[in-house]
Length: 246
Image (tube, rainbow, N blue to C red; front, side):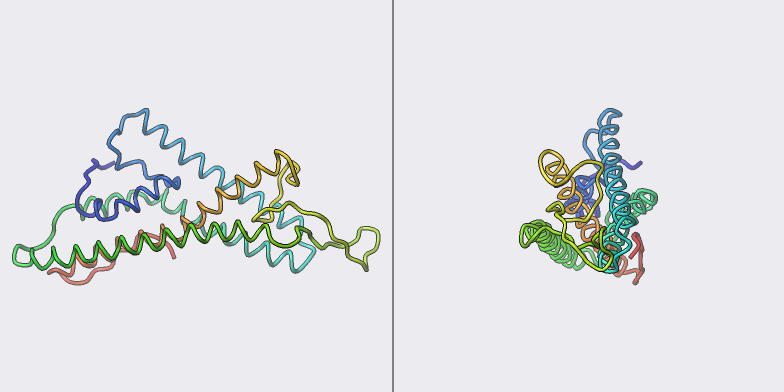
C-alpha cells in the first residue's frame, strides 16, 4: 500500500479514482482515514458489490439455460451474458492487478520534467488535465443517460414472452414476464409485489455499475496512459503503459 498524497498523477485523475471507489472497485487506498476499521468497511463494500455482480451474472446464466430451446431467446440472452462477463473481467482483473495500478501512480506522482522544460510542460499538462476532466464529464453524462434510457424503455410495449404451447408443439402462446431491464431468473416471483421491487432495484444497481465499469474503467486507463505518455515525452520520449484489458 502507498501513502495517500493528493498531488501529481493522483490529483490529475482524482475524479476517476473516486468514481471507481464508489462503484465498488477494490481500490482501498487514497483516503484520509486509513485506519483498520474504515479499511475493513471499504473492503466489505467492495466485496458486497462484487458478490452481487457474480450472483446476478449466475442468475442471468440460469435464465440462458432455461430458455436455450428458442433461437431468438438464446441469442438475446447470450449477448446479455457476454455483456456482463466483459464487465466482470475488467472488474476482477483490476482487483487482481491493482498493485500495478498503485505502482504506476506512485511512480508518476512526482514532477518528472527537466527545469529547462518546466514552463512548457506545466502549460501543456494543464491543458491535458482540463481536456481529461471534460472527457470525464461527458462520459459521466452519457453513462447516466444510458442507464436512464435502458430503464425507461422497459416500460414501453407489452411485457410478454412468446413460447411454445406445452399442449401443442405446433403452436405458440404468450406468457406474462416481469417488466424488468434484464431477462433473469430469480428464486422468487418477480411479477409483482415485493419480489418485483427487489428485482427492479437490483437490476438498476447492476446496470449502472456495469456501464460505469465498462466506460469509466476504460477511460481511466486511457487517461493514465495519455498523461504518462505526455510526461515521458518531455524530454524522455514516448513510452506505452498498459494497465487494463480491452
